[in-house]
Length: 212
Image 1 (spheres, rainbow, N blue to C red):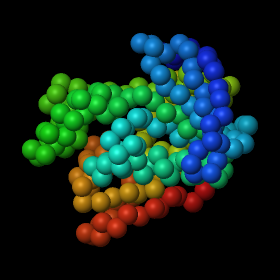
Image 2: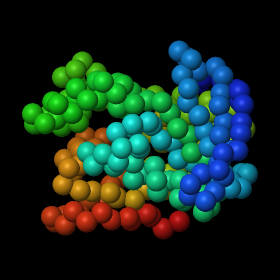
Image 3: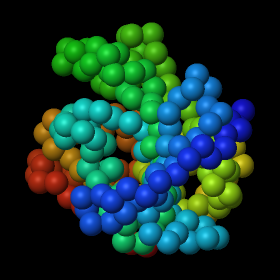
Image 4: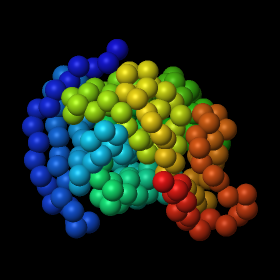
């Protein structure tokens, strides 16, 4: 069910990347969650570019190499600052299982389980996130059609199912290294993420943002 949320407040915050982002907070999320949105520049009024990003403390803040989340967030902010658009930041740490359980899953991954198998061993689904909150934010901002910056077809499906027209899905860059290659392969194999992984052992980070 679409979460009926409304804008609580907004404020402009200058960012170290040399731009100002307008931060929006909201009321109406279940369990009083604190999802938020940032507007960059002057978005297309009819069909803005949007990145829906789930929180990853280890990647977003501490630049962990076990995932590609931090690099995706940095890229999204750069693209949105250049073109205008919205970053929707969802407080769904660890694909919805929380930070502590994500660390538990990392321990299991070190024992040979892939990222989804580790979640299952902890009695969680492959992906516990839901994107009704993102659709609710878009509705509160009076946005009904978007270009989605993502590699995740399930994210596109869920947002579309909640009534937001996704005109186009634009792939993010590919950020692969020796620490996250198994994680990325599992996302491609098991959940059909659109990630153009290299076929050799060159782990140099590649930024392959699809042509717009």
